[in-house]
Length: 309
Image (tube, rainbow, N blue to C red; front, side, top):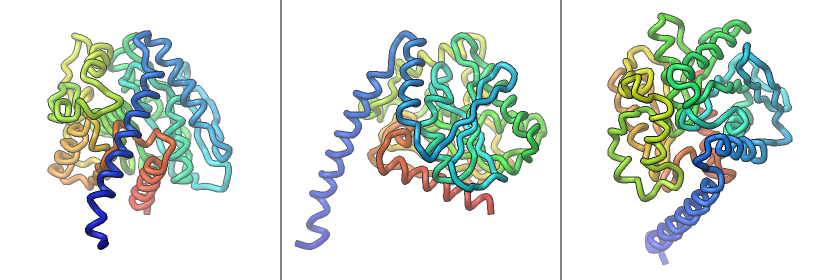
């Protein structure tokens, strides 16, 4: 039998495997998600503490005034000049540096760079613009330590991808120097929910739902601000002059359009942008403890090395 003859069966096998993985992820996510936001946050922290720990990674807790943060580093000789400023996800209502360890530990390992992750204030207790104010505070802290803007890569997942991009737009708006680049995993860029994937991927995404996203928007934006504000929905920002951007997304997530539309607009603004759309994957699949997640982190590292030459 030729290779071509084998392809249909292999494609079906891969599709079945992806469906099994998505069902598994949906069950795991169901154990974490809770309408009681305090319990939801606690479950996420417990998950991050379990799956984010590794013998080769060390965590150093610090505080910037009242804001908690941590350095995530590998226990070996590694690059010190360049640092990754990491914005965690969680819909602006949940998530933390502990929960983000499932990503920051992989990122530190794959890049051999220090990762700095901070606990920005969460909605609904602290709606917009609290998170972006805290992101600026974290940026200023790195500048105070002696890093230059070009020594920093800004990265984030989901709402953290939104925050990473909003931070860079805010720095640009203030006439400040910009980071060397951005790494965005499944970024949530459009809080107006205009993307077609909110409809076409609604039945596939094992993590996010329209109802959940609407609840997060209500917590973060409320009635006081316009969801189309570029610092709330960075998709509508002015990208002229932005540093290189690398985007990763799954083709089974309802935020797919948030990523693809961002990519198109970046190219239109002559920004050096790259996007990877991973077949069969879901929202922030990089969190999962399997091969595709580690391979994605290796691609993140390759992009960072390329722009740091």
